[in-house]
Length: 183
Image: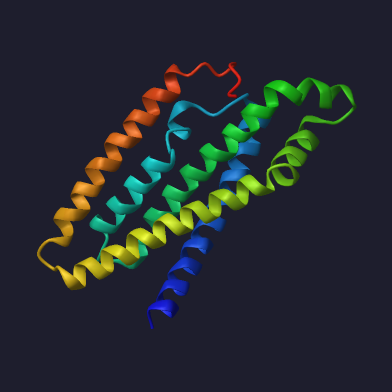
């Protein structure tokens, strides 16, 4: 019974993340077609922040699954948008002039880079979101059954730790030199 419940939850999260990924790719195409890169508000969702928002959504919308999955969609959208736009930005600065000098249009370049070159990144984002979301929901459900008085306290402690981790990651990303090569 637990295995079937786990597979259903993973399938739901994969479906939510895949739909969010389609919208994120369309948004990245729009941003890079009309401007060069998305603003900060579209690039804030790193993995700890995504985990924080998934758990927060579970706390807020535990009794309404439609609102929970809408919350998960927007969380997945911003997470996928950040991952895909970072992927494009990383290669755009290096290879854009080369590909455009070969006769590719900007749309062909973006399509080839995002869809064909970024297949592993797309799969990574969908699976990361699905596994983290499923783990949070499954563990929270079991904790709610086993410890009905304490599960919210443990989930709030988890939220606090994840918020601190997300903040540290945001600060660390601001101070890292993007031009330096990691060895």
